Length: 346
Image (cartoon, rainbow, N blue to C red; front, side):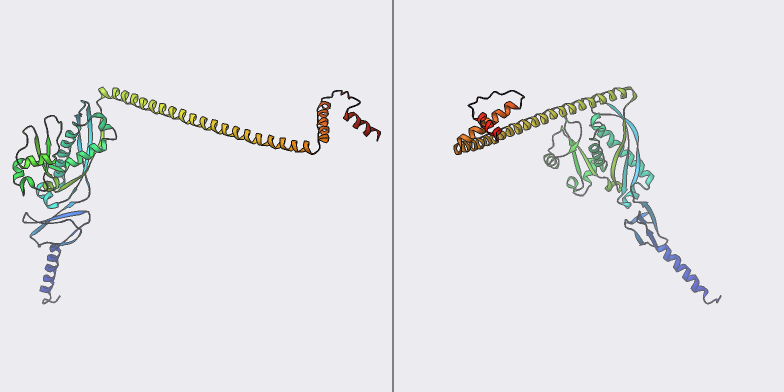
């Protein structure tokens, strides 16, 4: 190797090494932050080739896909004083990697913190709901409420004052609760106006929330209750009540079906009766018209040849008599006897 080319090779190797140190890639499933001697510099949420200062900046990557964290099962008391063992899990996603790294550092810490806050919201929500709401179709709305509240981070009034614009900060959410209420709910316009003017009734409690992603850089996508079991001591009685309830609903459906069956049968019978009456009436009309035509034809025949018509009617009468194998005695002076006599002489 030529000694003159050695420095160029060394410089090329160093240059390649520096270039490799200056660039890094972010996969489409990742988010990354760049720090300079531990100081937060920038974050990257889109995939591709990124640049950093060689040997000075450090890169930390996190998975931006949905993360699942199991919430430890707890025995909770519902609003109707029924005890439930609730087993749930939550799914979250990293939204702001810089805030996430600054406050949570890594995924294991995030799992622990999120499981804690979601568990707290589950306890609060279950305490407001009844047993039926949790085990019925209303469970979806219960989980939706838990998800919404899990994305809010409670802060103190002193921390509110440190926010930009204080109480008028656009990201601030206000919740209130009166003495006769069991839970906090979003403050209405009147309560918000009273809070801003410091004229809220002393009996009203206030809680202040900011988005969780502003504090931890994550968003809770959903919370799912996997199981809501009852203690063994009350499980059998609960199942008995559930069976009784199903029988009650079945009986109600059966009674409703029988009632509808009677109504349909009555409607069909009424329709049949109307149809028959209409047919009978039409039949009587047709029969009357036919008899009228027959009488008219009979009158025409009688008026055209009364003697012949009388003779034909006599034949018809004799025909009916002879069909029964009876003996008929004719008067020698009758028209039929004279006709038969003249016919035999031929």
